[in-house]
Length: 273
Image 1 (cartoon, rainbow, N blue to C red):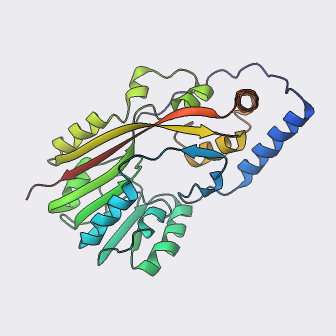
Image 2: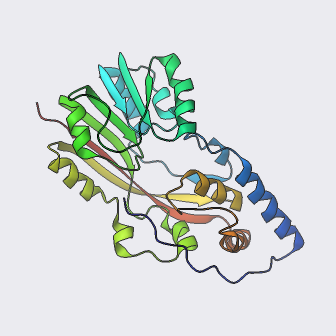
Image 3: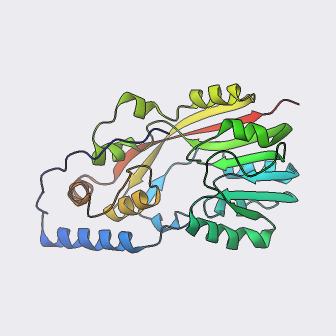
């Protein structure tokens, strides 16, 4: 996956409008820098950031498919929150995850539901036999190894995934890193996913994309988001990006919520019988 480039030069330090503004900045940043970012639950952002959801309702549609499957694999499950929300899991349900804190969290959440969590570094090959699953799902995978997905799917099996699309939240990314080159802005294009799935021998039966709106209401929400979604601004820390954070804090206080465009796409592909 293409990643954003190196940090943009830090803007010249800007004085805060007042001591109160400076104190708010320091308090919001300190709070967001201290809170845990384990798992894939964004409830800490309630009231502090909003994100439009795609019209297709991925969690509901995934749950419907899980209810009809016999053996399912959830790739890059995070803390297992999306999988655990399904009302019925298949008799064989396996999830993979790479990050140790999320592995522990997903295990505690999914084991009581009868799902097994496998620690996997998200590098091929997947630790499963050929044709092991009739359903593979993944919400917001960092990478998609199409040949491996095709290998572990049984004939007639389905891959169903919601993914982050090109230049998602790049208004925020570029505030910290500066303008990104065209190849970085185009990365994760849904048509590239279609081509890769087809090359792996899968038939793409559904491909939809939407551009949505995200708003950050305070600088703490920005810090939390960038700490949690680590590939947006690689190497992000509060100290490294304090000038950019201070400038954005002033902008939010002056102009209101910081708005960015979020891109998502839904892809469903089947393995021929």
